[in-house]
Image 1 (cartoon, rainbow, N blue to C red):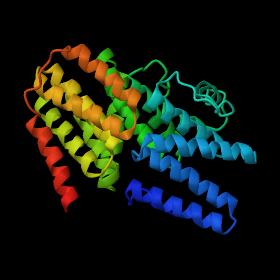
Image 2 (cartoon, rainbow, N blue to C red):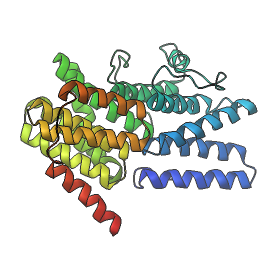
Image 3 (cartoon, one colour):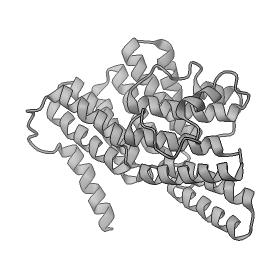
Length: 323
């Protein structure tokens, strides 16, 4: 078994791919299929190219359909539909995929009457991720993800802790918009959860904890501390090769800097966010951020120079590559 707590997510994905190949060589269909499912999921969570995730999850779902294998089909379809949405937009439907489960059908299957608790939790994780990245919060689960995981004593795996991370980000955002105490409670609970896991694995959890801490400081009005936590979160994401979370951290930091009047600094971080989203392959999300930049700054805004703190993070990346 692979310990996803101790090992970097990127290495865990590679281990599951080896397990898949080993199962294929030995004719163990169940083992190879299970390993490939985990390989797809962990690769997707660790920021692998969305174009690759889209292609591989589509091919795997179609293979399962051809074999009439139900186990794993919902999960493969959810990764495929999520990847397509982040690349093309939520309304895009790819030709030749009519037999795969649509996003709306997946949502219906994961509804209150679904007896499969595992799938309901898996889909809740995807909903939180989609809600945060598209900044549309009307379809988030009413009962908290972390609350359900804790109440049911559900064994943790990478998708669940990532889901709690997104639940925390969404909760802090809604707490600021509505001044809702319940949203703040959920955000703080996610922060404590991620802080504890960061003690177990700096590589997988540190950047997530730091970003939630930044959001908490922002919400509480501690601007100096928030600034430092945002920059530390981006630096950690960069160092540990989570390009999608580097994009999210940069976007949240940019919004924060804009709100407190640091417009040149904000503009630099917004541009970096767009660049990271595009590297990940999330072209629809990058377009949303570009529209936000245009709305906030207009078409005539002139960037004087790259922000020094961001330049320091990027210089550190170049130094790391040379080593």
